[in-house]
Length: 111
Image (cartoon, rainbow, N blue to C red; front, side, top):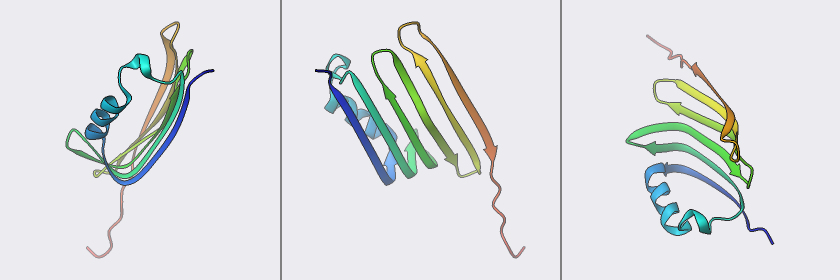
């Protein structure tokens, strides 16, 4: 029987550095990971290396043959938004990844 895992995490604030360290401690060595997994992260504000990323969303998964990044969305206070996705062949070490960026300007009234 193949081991599978599917998890979804939604939060107002998420410290990605701490979450990564916690996940490694809880999950253990890679040999103990499930054969297939899907993970979805969504946070209004995520902190990584001291940077406030808002919004932040990632949806990814893996199986014995592929690693898939369905959604990656990272926003910054400056108004820059990065969005991407991709699929990677684990056996042949090949894949495709796309990353788009945009600048969202917020209009302020008054001045």
